[in-house]
Image (tube, rainbow, N blue to C red; front, side, top):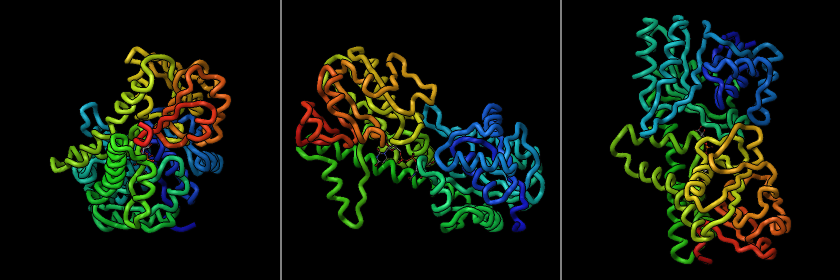
Amino acid sequence: MEEQQKKKILVVGLGYIGLPTAAMFSKAGFDVSGYDVNGKVVDQLNNGDVFVEEGVTELIREGISSQRLRGVRELHPADVFIICVPTPIRFDKSSDMSIVQSAAENIARVLRPGNLVILESTSAPGTCMNLISPTIERISGLKAGTDYFLAHSPERVIPGNLLYELKHNHRIIGGIDRASAEMTRDLYRSFVEAEIFLTDTTTAEMAKLMENTYRDVNIALANETAKICEENGVNVWELIELTNKHPRVNLHQPGPGVGGHCIAVDPWFMVELSEQSKMIRLGRDINDGMPDYVFRRIQGLLAKGRITILGMTYKPNTDDFRESPVIELAKKLVNDGNYEVILTDPYAQFKEISVSGARIMSELYDALNDSELLIMGVNHRLYENFDYAEAARRMKGKRIYDTRNSMNEELAKSFGFEYTLLGNGKHV
Ligand code: SAJ
């Protein structure tokens, strides 16, 4: 075993990032403990009762059975502390870094000289320097860069492909000083096969935010283009495919809005940081406005009656319902009062999920019974073999509104459906 693999790692926060990260380090040979404020999560980890996604779940169970990974209910001394806690925004879109702060306070109580503290959570620029460092110093008296090491190593993995991306994505590591950055790089080298780039903490914090902001603004451009196309007799999906044939163009896809806990959130940290963030704010507003735009289009298709929405998660093939634009859309339809809203999603049966005033049904075709309008909200792979004949038999009105360009227009029409596609002005 390499010398550094003898290090004890304590991961603080056992969520979407903390669990896979803990699993990767334990697989690499480290002794890893995982702490979470939610004791239930800790117990579930210890019982191997965790489901993250394919590959990660197995890795976690392997770590538990080899005793290199365990859940703990109290923070204990370690060599390395990795903060993987949520960094939400408040109702007014300002950043709420209080969970990072309390993680830093807890770490400070067990921190010893020579330890390394790593922030993985996506954070407001300046969090390492202006929040973690002073918090730890206030409680422990230890100075970052002098008595202990401090770095930011932002996670960049996409839900749905966690295991692959943890290994193969390039990493940016920002250190409070060079030694902190290098020590963190050496640690992640144990499982990262891609390049690792070193910088300062604030640059790393901002780089992470700008990656997601780039995507958000690009999606906003696609959504705006979709609206322009609807007004001008053009199909946005065809248009984007053609523009992206240019070697330096990569316009993203339009849709019912941007969800999840990253892209719909992180740009707000940039808005908070500087009044210069005008385009970033506009992009957020455009994407946040998409559920309402889709709602208005639906009003044009059906004045009243039963509507069935396929897919409720924030994007395809994930069991994550956080900030889902489709749920936002469902709420608007319910509140309108003219619609009976049925939702269906293959992942809903595993989660405690409800939408007030709407009915959630697990069986796809039962959910279509007597419906007037089918809305394709989230194009899960499971919908690829959609049975149009069965849908036509079950539904009362044969109407489809596809917000993802994922349904088969020809086939739908051959079974008598009226098919409307978001962003397609050719048939408006
Ligand atoms: N979406 C569109 N059009 C597109 C692409 C996405 O409308 O062309 C929508 C999706 O439907 C979804 C939302 O955007 O509602 C976000 O989905 P996503 O797949 O783009 O990203 P996330 O939020 O799942 O993960 C992102 C990733 N960031 C980038 O690709 C730059 C991931 O690498 C980050 O690690 C993650 O955020 C994070 O944790 O920050």
